[in-house]
Image 1 (cartoon, rainbow, N blue to C red):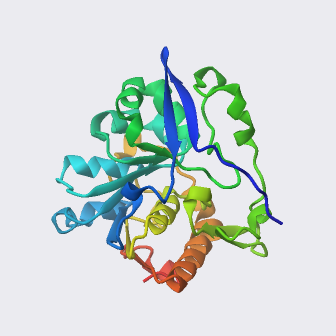
Image 2 (image 1 turned 180 degrees about the vertical axis):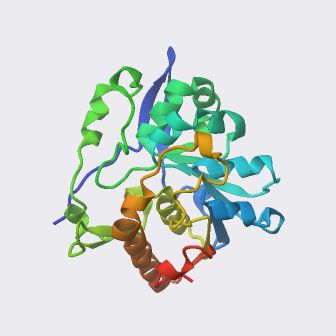
Length: 286
């Protein structure tokens, strides 16, 4: 079974008394092509605090959520992406975007962009040309935690809130979906211009983005998973945001990354996990 959903290429969003137009991610845009370079994805696990940032600062780098704060410690010369997939990050950590986002290429769901328009209208107005919409394939709006009164999107986009089963996309050549996996199907995108597959962590989204942008090798840092009781590297115990990673690590994150590692390797792209904490969890990551 396959659904033929035409995702909007542009979306108008209200910012104060103005309206800006946001573009959806399109892998054919010349500026999206990473020219077969190796790419680092830096997540937010506590192990990031142990990294030698000087060794990574000149490599093409994609940050996710709070890891963008590393740009305040080190001069990263090739920031090729910043990914936020869950609007709850904007609600819980509004100061991160305010302090560290300076117009780097931002890839986010509609729910995230709506939250930015509400909480950070000046950022949306100033940098919207650097932003691209990423659509979760089976619920295009994304993780929607915004209040109805905060809505900045016209009612005509409400259909994007519909949540379909991932199995509906099993015949779509842009995805590899494993329907038989329990308790629910898992999958991976081959081109997130047509949507990404969720797995419970923003790092999974960023990895699909790097693949769609023609990275030659994808290096993962800070995907620890086994120490979720500890604050993220940029947090303190008294101000750490809630996490649900413990609930989904075994059921979704690990099997999804194992699927991704196998599928991308078959396509000629290796994915390497550099976290010593979670290294043994994965069978297909380097």
